[in-house]
Length: 316
Image (cartoon, rainbow, N blue to C red; front, side, top):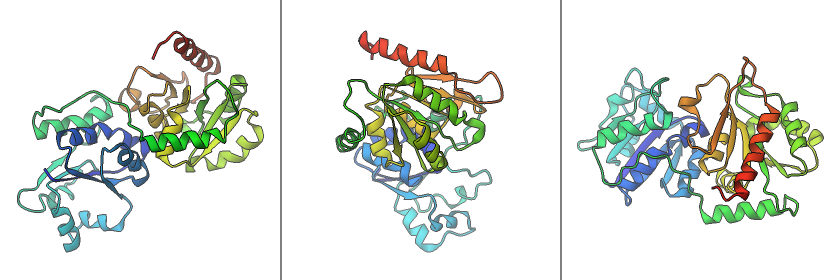
């Protein structure tokens, strides 16, 4: 197997749930060239970790050809160069499937759409591939943490050194935003959490979706709070990996915090955490007792204090 293409769209969290699949391909064929059509910003993490070799943005117009009756000649020629094509894009009516194999000898695998009550999302993505490819000596069905390159870690530490005060306490990362107001606790609750954590340094992680929160955070956050605004994802992963804990919503950034091994408290609202939550004993899920997502301050602070106690006691 010389070259592999994976079609996988979606946001940051969707991509991170695909990492076990990509790792499995890399272990089975370590010398193959693996490319992804998907979220280019998120895929930079997989390139940084060595899971894939390149990513092509899911927003490029050329992919519209996959939904035509006949593939454009240039797209067919490009797709034909791959020995294995894996499609995890929605394809309920088979518009994509009908174009494959694009040449004799090419293998094509379609991944069923993730469904509720069928296990974790990441295993639903991985298991059909292992079944189709057959048993391999390198198969591993365990969730593994994201590898971060040494360069990304060093650059993240350099940036944080210029941002954080000199202290022996590791910062707590807070991600107050979300792509949906139905999944988001009020900002004033996040500000109160940062005040109650003082004087411990707090890092507010902000992406493009949280731009509207910036003025309020700058004016209302306590002095020990600092902003990480739209950092490149490999550097954000490096910064999160040296924090002492993380609190966030059901978001891609929360998946990233969990993927680097950070102890997390995650607030889940309407989505099912048994399917969509990041896996691992280091991830704790809190769900509201009402339709409104809130931040249970006393409980969250107790969890953070328990992490500190476990760390002093030598727990991982």
